[in-house]
Length: 242
Image (cartoon, rainbow, N blue to C red; front, side, top):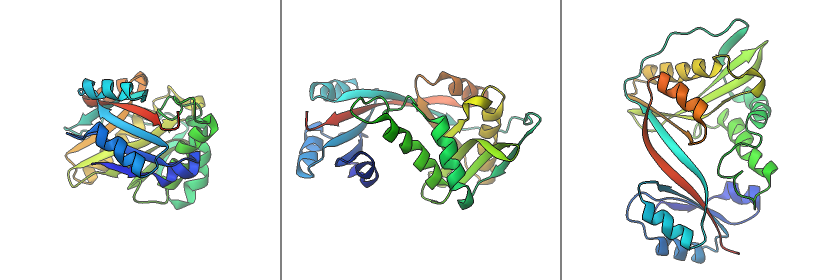
């Protein structure tokens, strides 16, 4: 059973938190029993949208739907030539960028429409910290990102993208975004190109990426960059003290 306690979420939200990704024949009853044994207060559950009966069962048990994730894959990676706009540059990030990455992500993901923000029981400021601390840690922790790319304006980062190898043949675009003041200038398109070039340099056969179903802007860019839909998942939250 692919379930585990999340110490990071416990520290952030102050409750015993667990996460599960339903992948096959897991029993919802077994999951709830495990949570009771571990004294879990807050469960984050991700399930394939194809398993609609599981989603219905979770709703009957008091789970709330907090987002729908769509996944894309590029299995024929080719870089699409397009220069950065005048006045912008790119560079690889490192440990020294953690602080600036934290600030930039806080601006990009403030009020973001992810599953944390969709839960009214969670403080919005704490939800913002999920992404800013994640981005800061990505600059220093190889378990989170193998490479970090920044787009800069006047030497200051205004956008970022992180990538991580999943295995010897596949990589993933993990965390990415552009500051609101610099969107719609082709910067994100360029960052995706950098991710594709990284995948080629790593001899990877495919590159994956995912986002909320409502985030249509980036999905259009992915399609223009050769990505295709590959799957989708629901995210549910369950509070055990209701």
